[in-house]
Image (cartoon, rainbow, N blue to C red):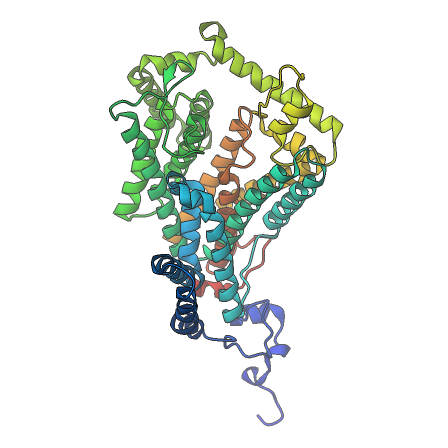
Length: 511
């Protein structure tokens, strides 16, 4: 009727907030502006691919060897592809951080290729955000506490014993923070979550099978603590304890997510991680990882509804595994409780107590910011051990490491970060426990795996200084991403819409 505005006649500014969500308006955008991107990504790609890189290559030919110019040009095109395809860049970055295949190639290790990939992925995310004029949502609690911890570690550089070493350690931490942020931004659909976890499973399946191949190869003789121990060819994963922890946490993910998809290849990959990873955990002879495996089985029993059946299956599994286990690993595990059988095991246990005491001394000397992130061993050798008998021993304890290296600020920030991640995972798990869609089941399974992994990491922190372990931060990115996706799925299931991060119901269109 004339003089009466209909619902369709109203401009977007006159629509209230709840109604705008139902209509699909997304927060963070200015409704009066054009929704068209500032510049088409394809146009940018063509400009660099057809004009900028060839011209740069032609100029380089005037000064450098043609083969070198060719390699640089290939690297530039690969970098360009990553910038305009940030999700594959994230997958590659995750493999470089978690599996570390680059450590077998000295040239790539010297280049810190994982840092370069992190920069490319961040630039790609920035280009994608600028061209689409849309900033992805994040879980504010997880992001805020992680940012606070990174800042606390940065401030500890100024009070550190060795500032250069502390700065390098902080860069490594920043790299892990970037990984968490990119996961929360780019793993934004159930399909991308499926791809991300499938690549994660493939990487760890390769790590486990490569370790088994090396262990059973002719002439393998890596003996430590009096037993033959499985390892890998890389520097960081070459430590049997680090390898066992990585695979144990991957097995934890596999146990929770193997049924999250009906895809045959998905289940096959996770089955390979569970089987091969479990065998390697035993062959590493890592007592902390073996204790972690028992804790994981106990956690599975506590959280499973079918407790009687689960208890029977776990008991059978433990008995069979014990009798199949070679005697040298049985004896190694028993030294956890009887130090008289193995003096080196008793010395190792006393070293952990010493690390805890040294961490307390460092904390008392510099209570606010500690001796500097990554400086525990340096500080122990330079300031906390006798001049005639210097010891560069590390903390071997998570609390000692964080308190000694980053002080009270670091302890508070890290504790807040872990609690925020665990609360987020528990919230998603609880609200999607009765979900019947495949997407919701996958998200719920991932959060249940992350929650179990955090408890496992805390337990392993009693025996090792694992503050810089990538799993803390990778899981944080996954929990943040799952919070956002679960909130979007709540648009079709109002009963589950109780998340603290408000999301538009229109995000369902990303599925």
